[in-house]
Length: 112
Length: 113
Image (cartoon, rainbow over all chains, first blue to last red):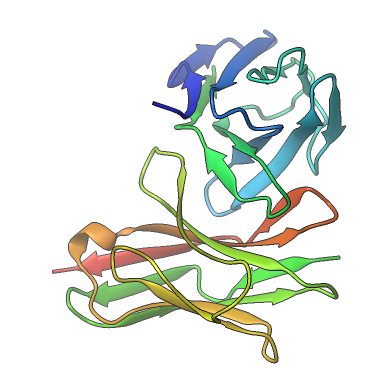
């Protein structure tokens, strides 16, 4: 089955630790995205990548980093510089001009 | 810059009643429009989309949306809702030049028996 996988579903970390969220897609999509979702705030774009080895900051990139070494993978690192990292993180991918995005199941990160 | 406004943050409705979730957008260029649905603790699923052609688009589970260019709206409707339609609904607009989707803040639809 084609789709987007995010792992793990739930993640707990201690304050001050970096943590990496995984996102893999086998849809052969060129573009990939990371969003953060907080209650009542909709989706906010963290980073996106339209091609391998290239990525752009979204609206709330501070405290996050990404890499895009392979077409199918777009991991997100939440660094200790992120002031309030507890949130639901969603990964998505798209292909073509319409920007129709396909979403993974999400990772809920809780920082203790 | 493009923006999307979902006019209601919460919409409570009784089962089998009709519902309308409102979405307005601002854009100076041609746009593509989407409605996504999110069930608790899950990712977003595409519900329906307007790319071109007929301004009325339908989903397989009875939702429909109408693109109104003069009013810059893309409201989502269903004539009779079910308990299973309880979810959060997001309207989004695509900027063909920017490679991104712009999302509204979401509307929480709560269907009560």
